[in-house]
Length: 636
Image (cartoon, rainbow, N blue to C red; front, top):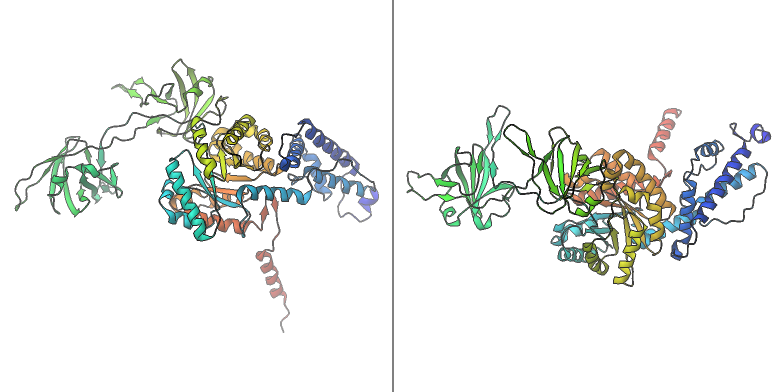
């Protein structure tokens, strides 16, 4: 050893090899014991048996802190085992062979690795192709795009998405219905033929998503206000549509508020007419008709007005017009109500399905009754315990369970922005520390499965929390079809993350499956800081199992919604290329976002593969040496 260190063969002094060899042999022994601890692998599909063994070895490797050994390996210029996910024993054995050789020793272990170097890469690629289809020519990662409802009637949108890089169309069963889903799928198949680009159909089951219930609607009132500057001076009149009552719809038309009135009365209005009325506050106001169109009339107001049904509209008689009758404002939609919640407020969660209501205060501002609301799955209230945290609407509002009563549960709000946060109906609820006794498949999911097995290439299981959930999905699929589609396990709860290895081994019963990192609910469940760590761990565990991963939630979301890039989103999208597929959500600019993601993935694939940085030739470096050469050239 002294000869090795001081004969000039090594450029730097290094630690003793014997100590390192002993530590590494212990690591090897640990991973082999970890593999055997699981027991029989007969239930694993033959395609996945070596992957299951490699996963068990990786879990055994990561059961202990091996950083001191890694540092020593690095000092010797050997693999630190930091990229051993795909072929754990093969990596350890190779390093041991090198150490024995450095010591002049022979080493011939009996146990052959379950997965060798190229085999690990090939297994992951084969599993990805089996699940997601053939990889695109110019990039490794596929692109999945969530289909908006409008895609059912917008073939051009799907065509453009395919032309710009979409490989998988995602249909969310939590929205719309089978008729809409079928029209979306038919448009995808039509676009496939037109573009010559293949596109798979992925259907996500809704799952037992816990949401807020209905809220009593607000008042039927329409507020119309002109624009004013900081001095309160009028800069632009308010605009309102006057339309026939039967065409009033939901209260907006072409982005402007709608005032429903009798059609016959409306037909007598002309440009320039002035209509006088008293609004809901008894303030005198007037509307000037600025345009008469086939759909109705456009009116302008110079002062704020509050319209309610029944307000009398009286046309002013001009010099050349006789007096005309008044008309009453028709039905105005009730406003969607909300609960305004601040820190220290109490919120009552009701077990019944009656609509909730805002808090009530007396004239002195004293609380008469706290805000209350129902939940979509009232049975979960049987599982909560006092002191457990609860979050609403993607973490915008937080609280703790304060009291459990027979018909309701009281929550004390502990987190809300200053001024309060509005809680509306159908917003998500997260109970990260509660042991929820919910089946991962709801009655609606079982119904939706009947459609999905006929049309989907892959089916996503929302809120997969343990191996029993995976087994249930496989059983239900086998009842419906002899040819199983690929399944995607969505990891979106703390419990689901903790049981990820168990669920992977359970899913290895079938040929094709993958994992989605559903970062939305997962961030609320574990905290945003912990999310950064967990998403990496999910990638590592799945790579060890040779399981393809979908990187999901808010990828290029600002670009998809507004058409504007953000720097952080570009970095996130680039990080996502370590997965086998990246999911985009819907938005008005989703085609632009798909095109941008395609460009990012094409650029990044030559620089990074999973955790490994790859050294493609850098034009930056080439130009640097060109400048040096130019500056040192001898003048002729």
